[in-house]
Length: 100
Ligand SMILES: [Zn+2]
Image (cartoon, rainbow, N blue to C red; front, side):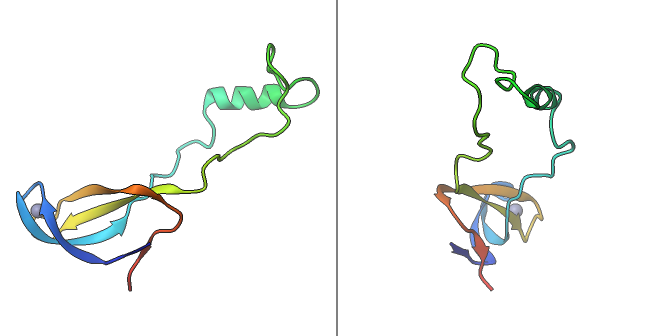
């Protein structure tokens, strides 16, 4: 999906339509790769046995990502007040790009 670099839309801070510069929202990088609980589970799964799942079937395959698409979120920056707000595109998309 191609998205224009700037668009004229409603700014909740100015309470009117203004020009906005558009960028794609990205989540902040994780401070730690794995949480304490994830590290503990990883340690238990190592080696033989049923991968630390005491009352469940053993894990044969660890699925990290079930979904192949993401919901697109845009960061809009108002040209008048300079404040940013987010806008979800409301659908799942495989690829999100800014128009050149
Ligand atoms: Zn504004």
